[in-house]
Amino acid sequence: MNRRGTLLFGWILALATIAVFASLGRWQSHRAVEKQAMLDAAAAVLRDRRPKPLALADDPARLRDYDWASGLGTFDARGPLLLDNQQRNGRAGVRVYRIFLPRQSGPLLVDLGWLPLAGDRKLPVIAKPEGEFALSGLLTAPPSSGIALGAGIGREGEGWLLTRVDPAAIAGATGLSVPLAPRVLRLDPAIKLGYERDLELLANTLPPQQHRGYALQWYALALAVLATALILTFRRKRTRPDAANP
Image 1 (cartoon, one colour):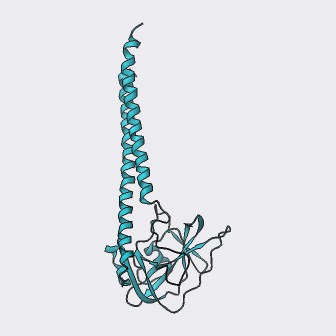
Image 2 (tube, one colour):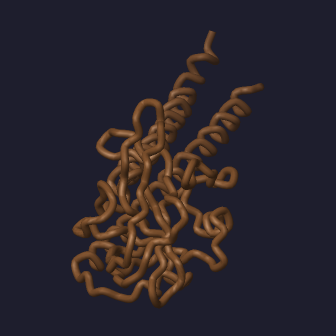
Image 3 (cartoon, helix red, strand yellow):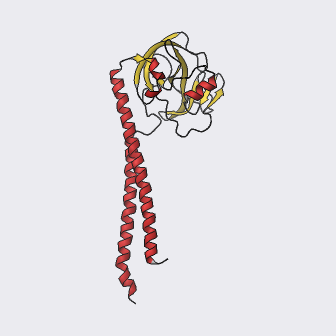
């Protein structure tokens, strides 16, 4: 390949690499904006805490919205649902969910909090809360699951082990005759029920500032490739007359 062909190939490769790095930077920037908007919306709801009915959890149009909701009901007799691979303060554990039956709306999942797992990964015994409860908390979309592989739910003893929270799959596996609400209730930590918990929305995922940091890194790599291509191109041009002389 002659020098012109080599130069052309090098620039094609450099521009393709720059495009990939810039695209990754834009994606990380977009995720930072999305997550910051999510945190701002949830913070506004948590500041106000004006209770709304639990029936709002049934509205699919509000899947990405946040509402502070409260209502009376009982927990379903079915066993607990344990979301696997949940980290808290550097410890591995599971997040405990149960199906709740409000008086005036359809069933929904309630996040009761986090429990640690021992080294043998023996699942904890979860007692069913008995009686009627007045629950309140934050209605949110189920936690992000990433790439959905397999059914995401399997029977374990008295309950089920989850790899993701999929209300439709849970309703089918547990034999519910009606659909589960698409949103879940993050139970108010002040309520004396359940386990370790808070209302942190990004406990097992990256916060906005980390996405911004990754975006900056990708943009810096794109600029580095561009600078390297320019340096090599102009250095080649300066050395060509010398190379032509014997």
